[in-house]
Image (cartoon, rainbow, N blue to C red):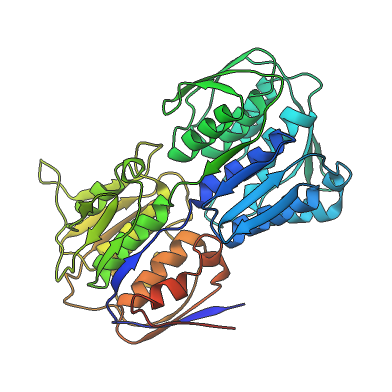
Length: 435
């Protein structure tokens, strides 16, 4: 198990470019299973979750070629269906949450899929009902093999229909879309997720010959087609990394430029940080964050305490609440953080409290942060990263802290952030990776 040793108190300066979006990459890479023609994909992030998924597809029989550092070609001409029933496949799926996204394309093209209960972040209950209920509406039958801990899904005939999703699940919506594009007839998905990741998936599928309308809304209409063909696709910059860099700059009193952020796809993320008093200047498609000696939390029009809560797009993504929380510890003013979707995601705040942050954990979903306004700096500490987003929040805290910190279990951070210590060291951070 690797760790980061961080020497806090070093401001950053310079330019940094966000990696390709992790969540989009997992979806569009799985979508390559829908055709036997090659698909060329660029801006693919070099992170653990994506690399593990690429390896999994290669083991399944997909021909994979890496052209450049971030450009790959995938061709799923023929798959080893026996491998999909092997213990090795089940074990790899169980360790990688993104593997659930193979369900839709395998079912759509091969009418059969095998799925283990996927792993991933330990952030509370993450049910699969939306995936299964939606695909069941298309005509699939599920059998649970308790002895092996896997779901066996078959569909001799997929037929489109209208469905109302029980929740706007991003991966659930993606799976249903990928199954429906090759189904007979028309599928309508209401209460569909409409994040930029889903929009990108739909646009790529349309270039492959699919017929999807209503993109960017919560009502998608999919006219099934008989076959899809190859295409080229470029993955968006990772909005979560953009938000992480905004918070990092403010928290460490740094002046940085975040390059090529695809501002139109950031939604309310910049304004959420502005509510914490952070200045953000848009220069073309770059974000300039000036040095902040202080930043003061705003309030609502009636004077009540500022609150941040997650919501389906175009609401605030839950993946940035951990970053907003840690940045609020050095703001002037108080903030309520309400994490609605995951009941274990705020438990990392005990590590921030040990560093000197003033945080009241009201319950598993809510925390009140009383900002120090830099009068009291956080103190370096030893801690462990419980998940990707808490991991980057702890890294931000350690970079701003007085004295050294050690973060273990950084494989969680590696799952979502590409070569993060080298990229931040180039800006002036003092971060060392050790075994």
